[in-house]
Image (cartoon, rainbow, N blue to C red; front, side, top):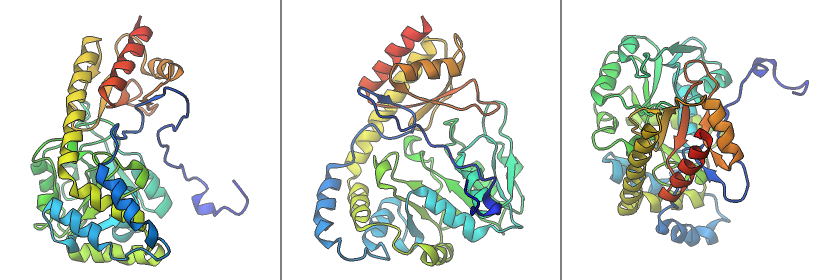
Length: 353
């Protein structure tokens, strides 16, 4: 680092995303991207706004917020869009945490949370998950701290019941509870906390277009909360990035949100492939957790996880390996198309032999 870098951030450990390797015939199963393209309506919508790019985008993001609101069953003033769901997380943590109020989260969860704590100078309160990787949500009762819960959790792929999360919200009435639902569209009916938003003024639900809407490259997310919380986060947003969603992405997101049939079809295809891949890995001796996401968390029996990860990489198949304690014997495998998963299994067979 340079000698000008601020000393308060000298120890910052940046978030490590999945490898973005470029090579012919690569099977990329390491970043939880959707293997299918966005809705065909997205391209038409983007083409329709190109001529207007000389003008600043809509500060209110009205069309996009209205499309999201109709889809999730909430008023539009309960919606705030972000440059990826990561920006919504940043806005919420910046608005509702400070140097005295910690952010509480699990020890095995989305690794962006501790990075945000370091970046924003927020103390982190880390609570261990159980031995089976499920969240012990009773540990969050009455914490007196801001809380973030990834549900389904990453990288474990496990879903906590809405009723258990509601109890956390109810038992922390004077502090914000953020529920990060990046993968919830793959978890089936009744898995989302969105219906709780009108009931609790301390709840923020964060969602993304990157997974189920096939728009990871667009960097688009949103959160839902009661209007007073949305106003607080907007105050932060307008203080540093008022035009945070481009006209292209507003149009693309609106079109993607409106094409419900396409969304449901791609989600269903991924869920079918997820079950087929789970069965195939279990036949090969893997322990595979019951996934509620578009990826699998699996532990091999025949060879060390890191060895399999490296061997697959040499064969042009990228998955994810984490060296962190408690999960260094596990692999995270994004669900691709049936053809991609067949290639993954074929290469895996060679390695296991």
